[in-house]
Image (cartoon, rainbow, N blue to C red; front, side, top):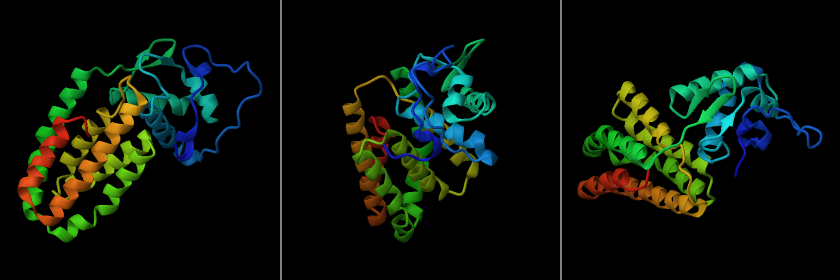
Length: 238
């Protein structure tokens, strides 16, 4: 999986619960973290670890242990974790740390339904008003989702997937709608416990839908656009 900053750091078994020390030898080299953006980098690293399963649903992780692994104090980790609490990805366990939330199929289905209520009407309206040249400019974003899916990079796919949807919705000019949709999208990306091979197949299918949708938008084929947009939210895609 491609490494991007501290997101490449592997969360060790010792970082779970109260086990905050590594007794199996000298500590691993610590990644360099720019002090002016520590919390932001740690937040992105934790989000990536959540998406690709390195932070496991139901497990408790302590801020001091995670901070030691990232080469920072526990403070920016706690700050980042508090943001993840707001996003519904983790919950506070007093005197222990943070437990990764378990996502149930019903919860993910509800998130998909709400996203569809917001995004589908907007996308259909944009399909009727945005010129094909503008849609062509989004091709690199669709291609990026395909590239991430092809190598099974779930964290990378999560970012490129949200970038694609965000760029499409941004064309409506409603910043509040884009922000709400992005929050819902991020919440829907925390994984269930499932088969990694199945997850990769889902990524490939989802990425193919992005490409097909963009092709239909460029061709201004409204019936196909409507069908693809609705299928994209009713299926396993994101």
